[in-house]
Length: 114
Length: 117
Image (tube, rainbow over all chains, first blue to last red; front, side, top):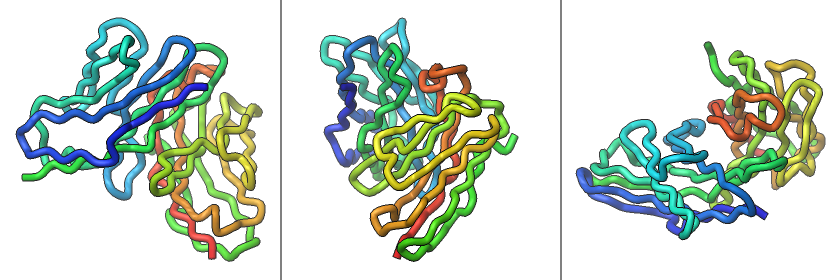
């Protein structure tokens, strides 16, 4: 069965420093991987996705994610964090084939300190 | 475009009451889904639909019913509310026929915060 894990409940980073939010996955076929962000009292917003091709995927708001097949990871990164990046971040996975569902990680709370 | 709209924003029910959470989208998306979000549990899929007239169960379907009579609307019905159904409910939609919608960007509504006493 497919699954996704976000090993850190919370990440703290100083403004201007690089940030990484980790995600690992388990699927039986080719993975389709997504990152979403949730600001307080709001619905989720799409950041980026990996389907195939380049392992480095660029997305919204200066975020990027690196797909690593050997480590089954899809970590979210940003070179220079902003206070406004403080939010809840979710990783999700869908495997190829007839399974038509997305499976979500539990979320990582990112706090960027001024 | 209004995107994905959900009503109501807040609701308080007593145990045993029934109600319907409304979800509508104006993007002509085939794929729609309902999630619940609970602290420490992330997002859990309740039901989803790949098009009008087609629905399927997600991870936590018990106590909820759905129907999809039009492309635009995907209401979620609580048959007999229980305190365990206290949660924030999100509706989402994406383009793509059949199951292809789950490969694509999901557009989320603002959520309904439900409390069952």
